[in-house]
Image (cartoon, rainbow, N blue to C red; front, side, top):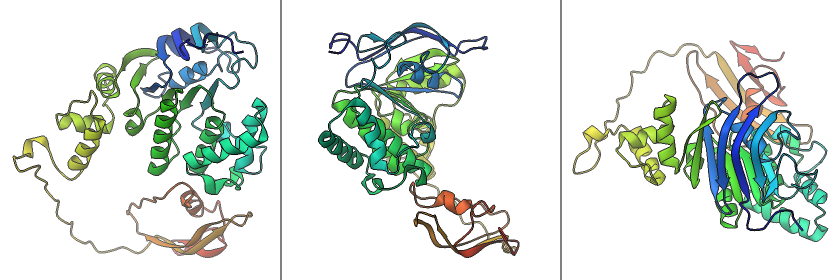
Length: 376
């Protein structure tokens, strides 16, 4: 039987203060927040505000795993996280880190085995393990990665596997520290929808994030600055208040909505619409009864093109596992030209750019800088 009454708030942080060894100022100072069953609480703030420290404490890692002085209390289903016996929180709380290399076991040959690792430690029967793993792979749309080696995946794919490894354990409290930092828009949306689903099933979720599209789907948002709480409210209201108190600009979507005179209390869908209008040149002062007026900028004169500085010609790269990550890519980039490389996680972006400075050698094709082959 689990310690603590079932009716206890799943995650309660009360007057939490954390100071790391050798530091004069605390990383957290008097933070209090409760996350009920089925509730999603986002955590935002500038770099160094204490977000990751809060995540570590909320998951029971401080002071057990990460050395620090802790005052106040973190309780998980009524159990004090700091003083609980080893293993007392196992299966109750899980944490997802921003860097998947800190999460993956590095001891499993396939993604399926990686997801099974935590379930094995929980003593879950084999038949149930397979069912849970299949469901989680489907939830995160990574079924095609099941038989791949975790460390042969792209950073974004590894992050989705790391998230899956925790989700499949079925913890009642889920703490995430910037889970979408390495994900493409599709992956970010998949994670946001997964958090919606998990909360709907009764999980308590504390999610550190910078992406307004994820924060906007939270029930409440906690804003930290210098280890202190400056706002705890609905996402829109909290983010606007944060901008005025901290003295920094609110996230882009919030500023766009403010320019469009949209109430942010619970209108993030409208914010996205406003973002699209403003990006096309609309401003509130140009609006008319017939709708927004959009000024389309004219084309700049075509300048005389200088010689090509960088040329990628029929580039192919195959990893030792046989995976062909880049297939016949050709590209020319002029001096002074800016080129963005876009694509889903695992589409070959990182592999491609590693050929530009010789970190990887092409199986076929070549990369030329000022006419000289890179890597020769």
